[in-house]
Length: 149
Image (cartoon, rainbow, N blue to C red; front, side, top):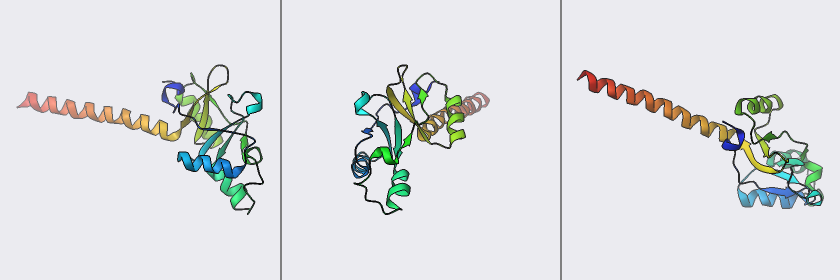
């Protein structure tokens, strides 16, 4: 399975030049805590950073900084780990673990944003696989009981 098949393709992005209060509002309106940052001046299709709700809390709110005085560029994590749509899941998870990240932007061959892979996506996939395994065992046991009666 590839990252492109597993990731979420609905992606919310913000431009690096908007202020932190506006970015936080985008998060609130979309019920998310992670934004891919783009640069409208360079076309806006490739990720130049990521911004998390934790970034805002640790770097802005906890330091009592006015969120209107900072732009996303001031707070974001630049040059984030990305995964290609055709990367393998295991390889990507190892890279995520090494860097301690829970989400990665997924990019196509030209570097354009294609999706976001989160650990939630991976867990959902594993749950579905485990359900199939449990279902196989359950069905096998039913067949065996039916043959013995």
